[in-house]
Image (cartoon, rainbow, N blue to C red):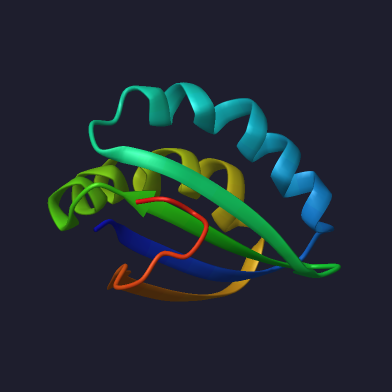
Length: 99
């Protein structure tokens, strides 16, 4: 099963502004990360987004965080974030998503 990293991020700007940067900048970064499975962005409010990242293993998730956090996250998201909650866990059941 995969490892899922969930970040609930509150923003000082509309979600769409941050999503545009994420969609422009992150695909190339993720393409170079071994063990990256996918990412889903969920708008939960006008200025709140939930980022669901899926990784092949805990090691892949940690390696990905070491690249994405200091680089892309700190450049494109953190300056416009007012808060963040982060959860990491193993997928234990997958209905309809595949694994």
